[in-house]
Length: 244
Image (cartoon, rainbow, N blue to C red):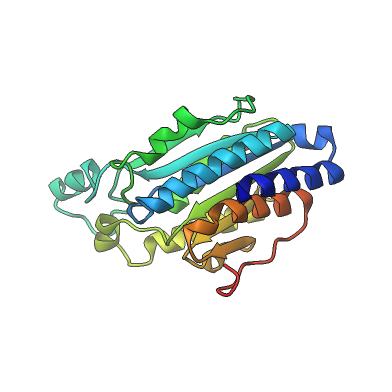
């Protein structure tokens, strides 16, 4: 109930400082980490929060995408098997199969709750590893080809990029360094605005514009606040341990 009230109030404030044309010329991607640590309550609350957020944004006239990222399997899968078959050459790079999921495309302009469509986010077999850098490349490439003038990505994550197979066969910071490189590249181009919401994880180590919450219970209200700040230019104060 509180999240819905927050969304209604935020909607009124956004309408006061933006025009219909501004909103129609803006596209927003919610990119959700579906790693193993998100399984259970965190994933349930993330699904609920993104569903409320997409309804709130669509009613305002914004284009909205909801994307998820994880891997096909644990322990590398086919890339790792192929690498081992080639006698394990050094520094092979990523050794897992990516799984990128489109829950809502920006071409869908319906202002309705996804409900049944977003149920797949809760599949217990989905959460595995998380390769954030390549997921961010995928999400940004989808936005780059769109006609809207303003483009925004909001990443929802509860940890650093991780894949045991990749980390065991390469330098230990390979995924971390790649994510930083991707973020720097997006920020340098300047055509996409990048924000992040961390769940029990300080995303400030990667993202300049971000909010960190201590538990997933605060995800709904924090996501609405972050969206309002991004869309109106009002920087939302980062939540501290005391008020998270």
